[in-house]
Length: 302
Image 1 (cartoon, rainbow, N blue to C red):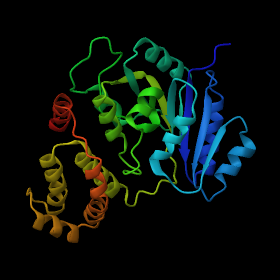
Image 2: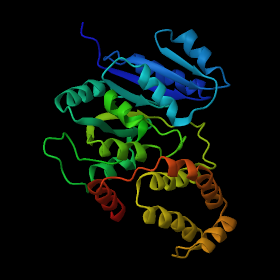
Image 3: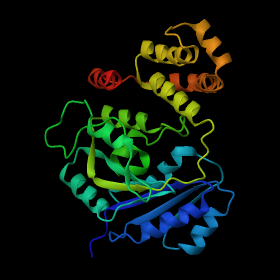
């Protein structure tokens, strides 16, 4: 029997019950993919549950929370050419991984397939599906779907070689909105990314999803991504726009940045987090090539 070409990698933290449901669905897939769980220092017995109830799953135990970069360890441990990501509250529709593998086989410069995401028992389309399908980026002849510069991590299949070449998920971002930087880094290396609606992930959002602080993390990481890869003026004005939104004024200036940080707790958190990480971001700064910067601006204008 030909071994399956795809490994599923799941990073988890303190969602023991949800992960058990995800693994039950995942291990029942007709594709029978290999599964790796990376436990991000859970304190609720997650790792022990996996070892006890799902011995066929490869388990990587981490002492501390590595955020989204925990997925990188799972990818490095894989021995298949392709890796699919799930969250601990999502799994793949039967047949989707084989479909994705066939497309990746047929398109050797395709690094990433952004799947469609169906949410909850009603299989409601995630709003991101329509955004990806309507991508304004120039069409690439021969690709099996519209080219994209974004994706949802739990609904993604990647070419392992390309993922590792691009460095995976950047540890500086830790968590929330980490996908954009990886999409840019893959594209900057000449890899293709596209949206394929016939490849589907099923997301059943956990009730254990702390929303407090999420928006601030997303804002921080969008700013850090700009400082890492976008023109300096764009990064600086992007930072100022966060302050302007808090002040309900369109301005680009240091004084207004400070005022916004005082008035808006989320802006204060996002700006403080950006400033703490800014020296590291500047050390690793690598601006996009001109053609890719143009594509990033197309997305912003939309």
